[in-house]
Image: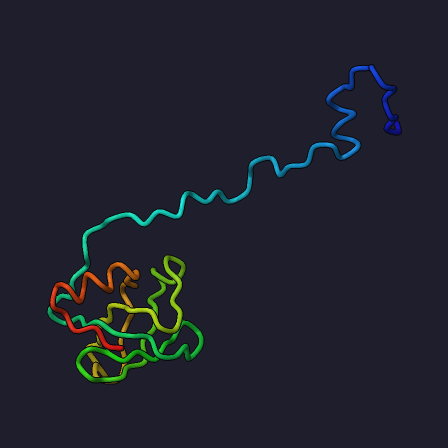
Length: 130
C-alpha cells in the first residue's frame, strides 16, 4: 500500500503521517540527561594511606601517570569495579591509594574530584599538586 497525499481539507489518519515520515522519534529509548546542576555532596577526604594526586598523562589501558601530594610520581590504574563509573582526563584531581607492594611506584585511583571539590580541598588545608 503506497502513501497517498491527502487532498486539502481532509483529515489525515495517524498511520499515514508515520508512513510519510511526518513524525520521527526513537520511541523514548534514548539516554536521558538531566540538568547540568552540580550536586553538593560530602567531600571525600584522604584516609591514612590515601593521597591526592594530579593526572599528568594517560598512559593507556586505564593507566595514568599521577603526580601525588607526597612528591612521588606513580603509575595508577582504575580498578575494575570503578572502570565504567567515572572517566578520567589529563588535569583531573584524583584520590590515589598506593599499593602495598611497589607503593612508591604504583597505585589505584579510587575517586575523581570535581572542580568545586578541588577548591574545597584547598580550603580544607590539603595540598593539591598542580
